Every structure is written in structure tokens, then in C-alpha cells.
Length: 65
Image 1 (cartoon, helix red, strand yellow):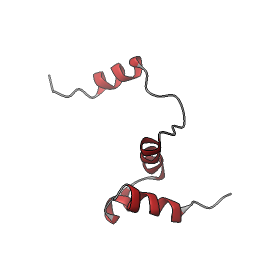
Image 2 (tube, one colour):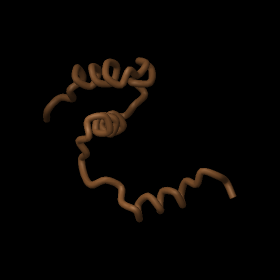
Image 3 (cartoon, one colour):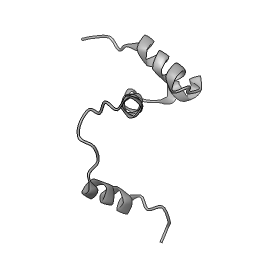
């Protein structure tokens, strides 16, 4: 098993994203990976399609009804 790349993660999270240390250390590796993908444009899969967006909007509406 390859060890987690903490040096790179810390450089990106604290340096590029400019996260405060407490926010960086509260992130999960998955959250950090998504933030890296958002900043670099490298996604691990396909983007969100219209149906997926509609499902999220229905599940998490901006206004309570």
C-alpha cells in the first residue's frame, strides 16, 4: 500500500487553496480530492449531468416549502 501523500496534500490545501489549518485538518481525503479536481480541472469521472443535478436540487432545495 502506498502511503498517503501528506506533503503534497498540505502544500495544496494550505498553499493553493489557502485553507486555514483547522479547516484543512477537518477535511476528509475525499473532500480534499474533490477540491483538487475542482481547481485543476482533473475529474475522477464524468461530470454531473442534468438528471443528477435535478435530483440534487429536489433533495436539497434552496427554499423550504
